[in-house]
Length: 269
Image (cartoon, rainbow, N blue to C red; front, side, top):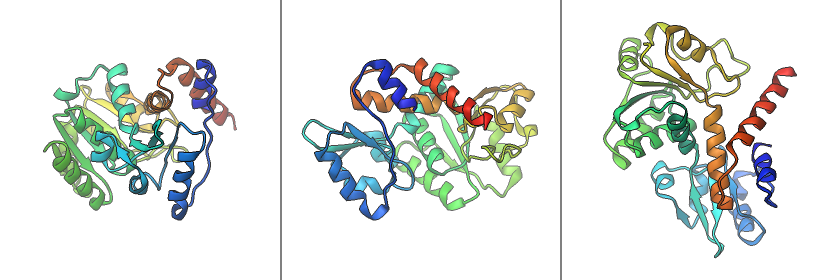
């Protein structure tokens, strides 16, 4: 709905629709995109990594990140992979907070798909330091190693089970991020960190946007922190996709309004 609202406002004869794809038929589906009237396609979990095997070319950030959420069909019928997830975060950070990424340190609670995209984009755009913790230590180690080897040696593993060490790294961060999904509906009473470890000078970001104000963000605001939800990140990543597929700038205000309408409808149910 968000994408289609944009296409209507832009006067484009384009339609965004979803369908489910079994993993073992991914190459056949992508091959069909080459020969049908598609500008490209979006890719969601669990195919963001697997899809790379079947693409002809990769954007630099996408290649280093090792995951694609956006595929563009070129005029010659080639398929090129991009990743707009992290870009959406970067644009939201710059537009909504004016944070200087190169002068900032980041703490990410969560190293899954969204955490990987956000931390990789932060590294790509010159983050000073990135601390990564996850309840699955192998995920955190993998992300840290990839950032240090493919982007810059700025990432550091943090032991999720060592509270003292974890809270110390949180204290070192300028931007504290919840990239876990903790606090998302229906688990609205959950939070990844106690508010006592937060500092008013910090920006607290939550990749969740349903609800827009999670417990984590509410408590961060109580402490005096600036807060940022994942709503605009979602809009900006979608706008980046539209730019890739259509070559035109998307109407951000229209997309934000549509997302808020959708969320309001869901809360009435």
